[in-house]
Length: 375
Image 1 (tube, one colour):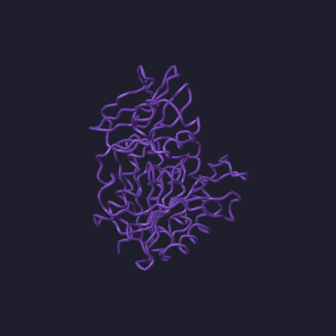
Image 2 (image 1 turned 180 degrees about the vertical axis):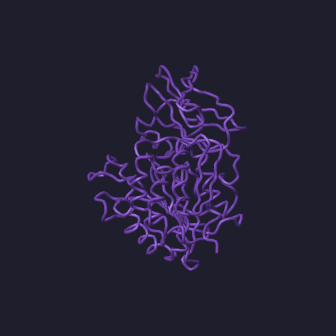
Image 3 (image 1 turned 135 degrees about the horizontal axis):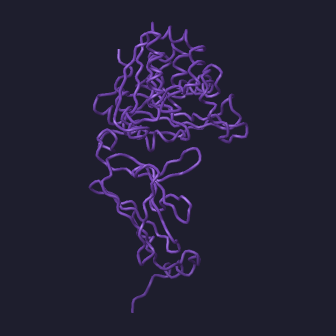
């Protein structure tokens, strides 16, 4: 007769009833399973009447039904997924939920989504190279009553003794949050790979929260960050009066304007354009991704920043603009460039396939970063 050790019997006797359960398919379920450009998504939802998959790897606005197995596991096999990173959720009972078996997720302003990464784009993949670190930094700003947060990337081997390091301020788009560039945007991996290949200089990347909250800290009124009046915009004030001084006092960050860059996508691109004009002497490296001022904003931009554009035309700087052929911001980007050209501003322009997506924005970051901080 086999005898169990006393401590094993006692542990079993003391185990809370809530922990004692029959084996469930959910205990060993893996989702998603990725191989050869396809992914199998699965969720254990035995009581659900229907489950759908929604995500950026599907046609825009479309949902894909999952099939239910006898064990209560719903699954769907999605072939032909291009390499890249995608946000997705399950729709169960009409409610969008994250994949409970996937620990990779990303938070925007109002929702949480799961992440799918399909390898195949070398600069975006987790390569066997030295890796930097991404810190979540909370801070107080005199501009806002609610606490603020930013994500800060430091390069591989970062050490104050090796500084000072140049800094890229990288802004997110409307509806997103300060963590999206480092999750679905793969910014840390992109910089790791570029630095390891000697294509980009080691740099600090600061990814701040771009939305302007209401007095109670909610996101109501967030789009006020799109104002053409950069000097009086709350986000700009937060960046110039709080974030930059914080970074330059808490990190081995260079205080020289020549070592400071700014870039942003969509809403963050409008913010970038505003700030780059209002503070021409402080940001000689500028990247605008899938963005440009809306038609109703352009007269105010011309009125408020016309002289700034004239000054920028006489200043040595990199102004890099990228957009997709089917990008919803393409017309705004083209109109912005026409305005720049009218003031004699020089720029680099890149039109790519695709639209208003992170697939393009990751590509733009990978093209833009190697150009920075070059003598």
